[in-house]
View (cartoon, rainbow, N blue to C red):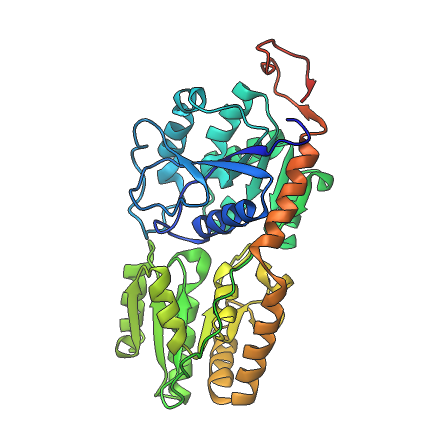
Length: 405
């Protein structure tokens, strides 16, 4: 790469708007868009499956010659062992994909799903790898983490030339559980595109709407939300609740609501598009996020941007940059219920959270995250890169353990 040429990044993603199931696709979109707007970096994004309506105006998207089989339906929450074969097939498709692309300066991979493919590309291309950790297997499946997935994560963390964590919470976890050298990890917070200024429809004060928005999985604590809702309804029977999202626990949560006797007060919407989320926020009195583990929590930024007060788990990564929230312990259903009642009954508190959160997110942007990533890219292009044993140099010769790019 000459000093005057754009830096070229080969990015591996798993999903992209509008076909998303969580924050990973949203983050890929926000980062690639901001990188394009900054200039100086050309990004090619590799995805495992082709869609006719991927929002690709700001990034070149490429796909395998044949879509990777075994991927979940859009809107579902499969980020578990059932996707191991699909992740392997994505890696196997690399040879044909890489042959059709110019060699990049840097490889950037998002989470374990793309790690096998990115590591294969690193071996072939002999280029530095950035491994971007949005969540770990312990975050997603704390009760029964899949050891094969943990091994993929460990391998990517060991071989990556730089590691990006979405929060200090995640950074500490990578150091503690995977033994990653702290000097190799940088925290790059997610961002948000602020909506255009406009009047927000006031939430109904006679029947406040309390929202859960996210994957309906153990990690997100949906059962705590419903149990807290049942307690809050004893104090204020006018409250209404929405559980928005899809996931493996959705049938169980419908059954739990019925068992708690609150089925008539809870709406289950399934997966919502971005437009539908915006509509929900226009009516919401509060967003509640009782996640058992939340490496970041992008939806909290989205709620704050929409003027919706946020009640969130005390250890969520997003609270490192968004302090104007009500923090709760996810397993303290009485505490969650009190927070629901406080925010929906105390307009002074609700307004403080709305104004404070709105002010804080002005300092959070995808542009800031993109600038940080660009600095990592450029640094990697000017340093020695540790290569796997027997890796091929750009000229096709097997090199020593270290080759200068």
